[in-house]
Amino acid sequence: MSFFTDCQSVLFVDDDPRLREANLQSLDLAGLSVEAFGDAASVLARIAPDFSGAVVTDIRMPAMDGLQLRAAIHAIDPDIPVILITGHADVAMAVRALQDGAFDFLAKPFAADHLVSAARRALAHRALILDNRRLVAAVAEIDSPLIGESAAMNRLRETIAQLAQADIDVLVEGETGTGKELVAHMLHRQSRRSAAPLVAVNCAALPHELAEGELFGSDLVDRATGKLGHAGRIRSAHRGTLFLDEIDTMHPAVQAKLLRVIEEREVQPIGAAAPEPVDLRVVAATKTDLMDAVRVGDFREDLYYRLHVVKLRIPPLRERRTDIPQTFAYFLDEAAAKMGLAGFRIDDSVRRYLVEHDWPGNVRELKNFAYSVVLDLPADPALTPMQPDLTLAERVARFEATIIRDTMTAVAGDIAKAMAMLAVPRKTLYDKLTRHGINPKDYR
Image 1 (cartoon, helix red, strand yellow):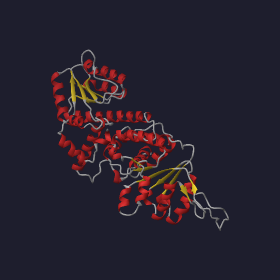
Image 2 (cartoon, helix red, strand yellow):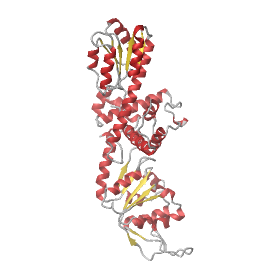
Image 3 (tube, helix red, strand yellow):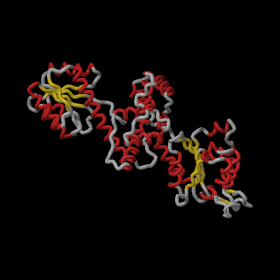
Image 4 (cartoon, helix red, strand yellow):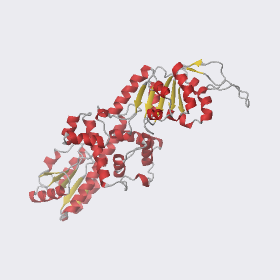
């Protein structure tokens, strides 16, 4: 089931069978799911605080009239939209009901398209109410800095907990913005090395000519200052964790010296007569497949296999779209707190963007978007919710992929159950899984 509200219905109440049937047909022809009731008591039994639809009711009915029904629904949940149908003599009464919380009213006689339009607006309003409630509730359920309840993220957290205690070197693979440094910090904090430092090195930001001294340190006296050299990042991580981010960008000459550190657990600073032992764990991260760099000669094969004791892959957001709402809610809450705001609300354009966008920047991009929503910044024209460069076929394909991912999450990757839920043959489902790059194993 999708996080965002998508299955909604209109409950139509009128004691006149002829008018009830005519309006039921109008709503049905407009593609709206609708149920008809002949009295207020019957429809009231269908209303619960999590009711996702809207109610359209005539005012003048025997026993319980429309105004009494609206008041009873308001007592269950004041945010359930109720549209009143009124005769000419009751317009003043309907206006007062609007002031008391009714969503809208239609004066008889009204055109079918007016009814449909009012119903659509009521359903959209209710969907946003429920979606915002779920976002708020989702924040309260977060108990890990690595956010998400998909099968892939649950498995990743479990693996991190196991590896943290194993005290072995780890290679972390993940696209830009997926949270590779966060994984490194979690491995460190949950390990026996947590009392010692985690030393992070962004290999891409280290100029080649400075990398050796920065990493391995120096025992030479600086002629300009007269001071003895410095420890370097590797010695600073003694008894702790050394995190080498973007290791695929490391210069080949530095790779050769790093190999010795990892093989022998010793480091020889510049100018030192002998190497020094170091006790550390190495966590290396790359945004690309490191074996590809090995194949083209940009990365040492022996170093790759030394680092690749265990590999952790962080799935991109597009592969775990069910995690997007909760992650987004977390960053909304964080942004609201930093800005001193009491809370947050999303509108329909934000919701559509969350569903339709592919998030190439992953969690980092999602965080930036959450902050822009809280700050009410103008949207980037290149990132509009309904991207004009997408064809209808592309939009349909994206929507289909979202439905399949939601289904695979609901059935925990069970192909047979997914076939039943989607009502498609096995071959069709497998063709669609292949087309959208969806692996059922990621959901088990």
